[in-house]
Length: 97
Image (tube, rainbow, N blue to C red; front, top):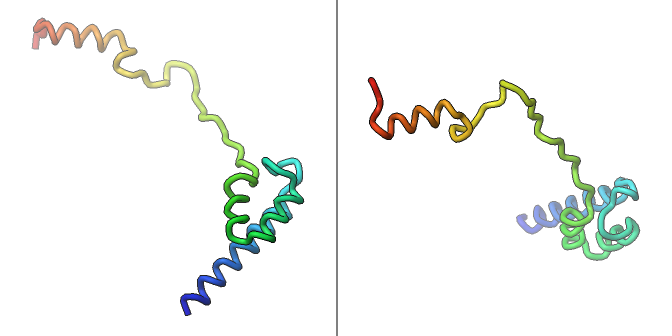
């Protein structure tokens, strides 16, 4: 029973990989031509699918983190002159409280 489930999972992965290669536009395929990727996935089912997922699939576009410049951007403590002045005063023992 476990062998059948593993076999079905491998078949599903192989079919998914093959479908993914076929439906990916030619200009988005990485490293080698699309026809060669199809041969690799068909002839070497498990390993070919894994290599396709790692090295052939197009990368998802990554958006830059939105950072709005201005007064709303938090500063680190070492960038805050008032904090450093207060820290220096407290370390010298000039704290009035």
